[in-house]
Image (cartoon, rainbow, N blue to C red; front, side, top):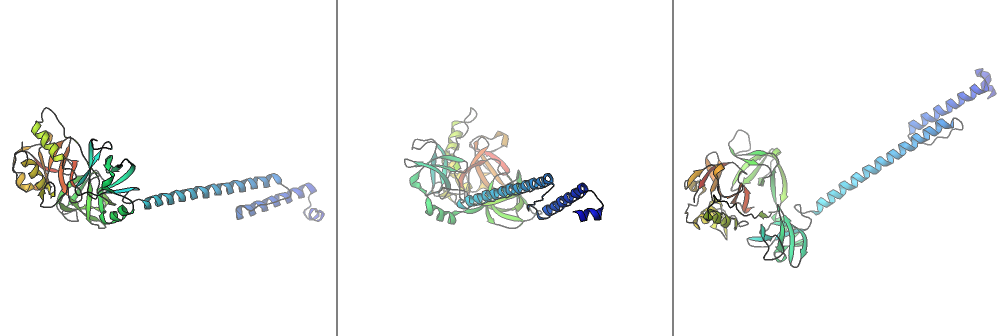
Length: 363
């Protein structure tokens, strides 16, 4: 120290201060260059303590960050594991083992009100089981079904692999269904949000889909693809008002009783399978109206009504432009019942799920 004082020509106090500053400076440099290395300096303890506090704070911050990242990773892995356990979206899968459809009731018992129909091979989530009845959820329907008619466990899992189909769900307010996979071709119809379309073939930019009993193309960006099993059909009662005759009300209710039935192209049997015009032909015949087995031909019968004048029992026709290719029975409340396609069978839909071409009153 004396030699240092002699060289620098400074007082002992000044020399000691310089040494402390040099030590602290070196400590700080070493600290920030190596992150969290501990530093011990014999003097200038206040400054060194500050450095240690910075180190501890940084280390704790890193630990918290790592802990947070670990939690996120664990949650992500748990979510993926849960998704991997599901089959077509079901965690406790049941599949309807019937020839036609299974009634879904509001309460567990044969006297329970029917709230839906579970078609053959349709999937459901089994929520609980009691006294020979499963409490299930499928599509938009929840209720009770006889457990004797539901396949479960590994048998259901294996069966699901054979039965599932790729479905395109519309993710925009409306979307065009086109005749060909380009924007220069004919627009077959306009379909509304959340409508589920069976996929015929997937493409990068276009997806070929089945709409009722005809094929078309939709832009891939306007649909979400997923693997699905058939779902339950809502069973509802038609509107009854002073303007609707008992005959029309009865016809609509009769048509609704076949919800969940099979679709068969060219079919005319309400028990073994019908297509769209086969369905309307058979229902109308029960009420003294005899129509040809052709949606286009049926549009020439009865009298024309506007969509604002629709009553239960009226027929609504759909297709491309003025070319008719599908027909349904209006049941009131903005809904129709129709034989849609081989995947869905006879079901209830929004009357404007696609653009109507015309409406006819037969009664």
